[in-house]
Length: 202
Image 1 (cartoon, rainbow, N blue to C red):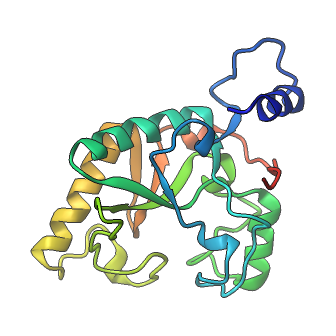
Image 2 (image 1 turned 30 degrees about the vertical axis):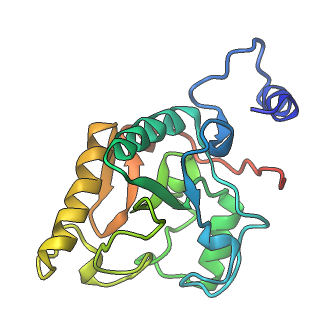
Image 3 (image 1 turned 180 degrees about the vertical axis):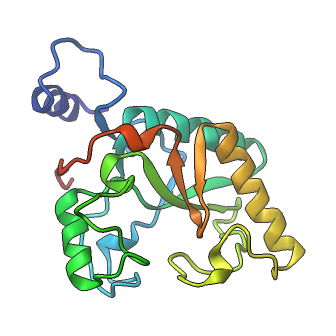
């Protein structure tokens, strides 16, 4: 991590030592260069048809970052890597999304907050060595039954890809969100507080 970023985080959270706590927000790219980023909500290429982030950064709680890096290392051994669509989402952004689509089927009610608002959720897929996304049966943010883990009317290839993604993520401390094949929550993240921390655009 760059010194200025580290200093900012330590100052912002009132840290008294050089040890960053597991619950601190950190930038994933400062900890690993092995991820590919396609931050959908920093663009209009999403179901909202609107950019709700000022810039496409991936911040998460440090404990989430560590688990995600471990999962990615396992994928890399098989010739794949994680592609990120969304990470931590400030509560103000959740409110902005809710104002565009006020439907709890598609957007978590900001009155309750989501695991994204807690820094413990990540939306992702896998790409191969050529940068091609593995076929998961639907696009990201496809709000239909086909996106659910329990949906069976899929090709054997899609089932195999989803199973592979799920197995490695679960082996590294994550849980599925059953209606969305791309969404994974760090186990225990529901106990983290909802946050409105906002990152600086680089």
